[in-house]
Image 1 (cartoon, helix red, strand yellow):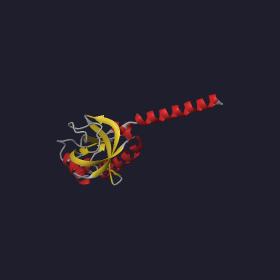
Image 2 (cartoon, rainbow, N blue to C red):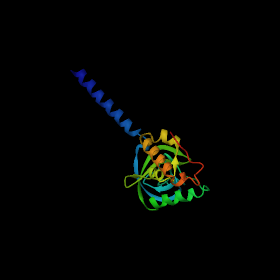
Image 3 (cartoon, rainbow, N blue to C red):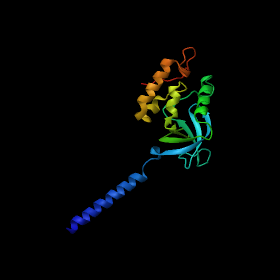
Image 4 (spheres, rainbow, N blue to C red):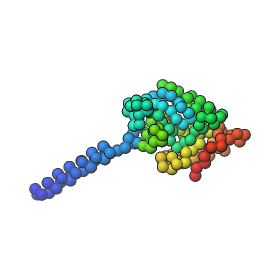
Length: 179
């Protein structure tokens, strides 16, 4: 009987240690944090302040630079699409807006790859749906697998409707189509 109690105690302690280790080793990527918009850089990059940034921007532990996950927005110089995408992002989430950030755990050029939500709406998905951004195929497959279908459907709808970067008169040459 004494051996059984010792075995049971060891099993419970071992399970407790494993649970504690798994909690301590859970990547921040699973965290959803509240953040405040500081600045819109372009159609898929923005700066936010939050309580703790995984990759601090310019040495400030509360300032983060984010790349919107799953999407690719026009870069500076890709007129008129750059201006339209940046302007739309500024309208959707102006400076000072409180948003939820879903950190994917990935990073690109010191930017945290994230999905941004305002009022339970994915800003990333909305930009694709409106034709302001195309899909970033690599992120779509390795970072956004659970929402891949929604992103593909949004892009197909925007493309069929000829919205934004998909307009038939002057489409964005760098727009990507993913499968």
